[in-house]
Amino acid sequence: MRIRSAYSVNKKLFFVVLMIVSLGTIILTMSAFGEDGGKVHRR
Image 1 (cartoon, rainbow, N blue to C red):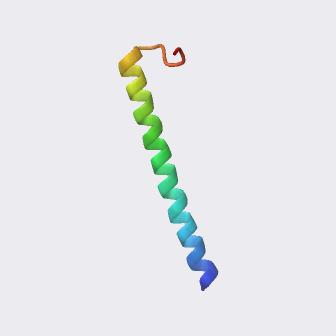
Image 2 (image 1 turned 60 degrees about the horizontal axis):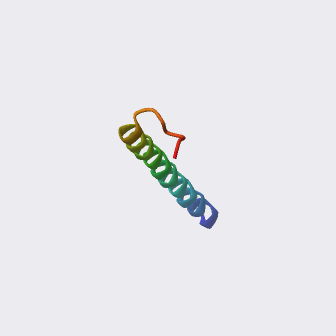
Protein backbone atom coordinates (compact mmCIF):
# COMPACT_ATOMS: atom_id res chain seq x y z
CA MET A 1 0.00 0.00 0.00
CA ARG A 2 2.88 2.34 0.68
CA ILE A 3 4.18 2.07 -2.88
CA ARG A 4 0.73 2.76 -4.29
CA SER A 5 0.21 5.91 -2.20
CA ALA A 6 3.67 7.16 -3.13
CA TYR A 7 2.85 6.58 -6.81
CA SER A 8 -0.38 8.59 -6.54
CA VAL A 9 1.48 11.41 -4.77
CA ASN A 10 4.10 11.41 -7.52
CA LYS A 11 1.37 11.59 -10.17
CA LYS A 12 -0.27 14.54 -8.40
CA LEU A 13 3.08 16.30 -8.07
CA PHE A 14 3.85 15.74 -11.75
CA PHE A 15 0.45 17.15 -12.73
CA VAL A 16 0.96 20.24 -10.55
CA VAL A 17 4.43 20.83 -12.00
CA LEU A 18 3.10 20.42 -15.53
CA MET A 19 0.32 22.95 -14.88
CA ILE A 20 2.77 25.47 -13.37
CA VAL A 21 5.18 25.10 -16.28
CA SER A 22 2.46 25.49 -18.90
CA LEU A 23 0.97 28.52 -17.13
CA GLY A 24 4.41 30.11 -16.77
CA THR A 25 5.13 29.56 -20.46
CA ILE A 26 1.80 31.10 -21.49
CA ILE A 27 2.32 34.13 -19.23
CA LEU A 28 5.88 34.64 -20.48
CA THR A 29 4.79 34.34 -24.11
CA MET A 30 1.89 36.76 -23.68
CA SER A 31 4.02 39.33 -21.82
CA ALA A 32 6.79 39.06 -24.42
CA PHE A 33 4.35 39.51 -27.31
CA GLY A 34 2.63 42.38 -25.51
CA GLU A 35 5.89 44.24 -24.91
CA ASP A 36 7.79 43.56 -28.14
CA GLY A 37 5.06 42.74 -30.61
CA GLY A 38 7.10 40.11 -32.44
CA LYS A 39 10.71 40.41 -31.32
CA VAL A 40 10.74 37.77 -28.61
CA HIS A 41 14.33 36.56 -28.94
CA ARG A 42 15.96 40.00 -29.13
CA ARG A 43 17.18 41.70 -25.97
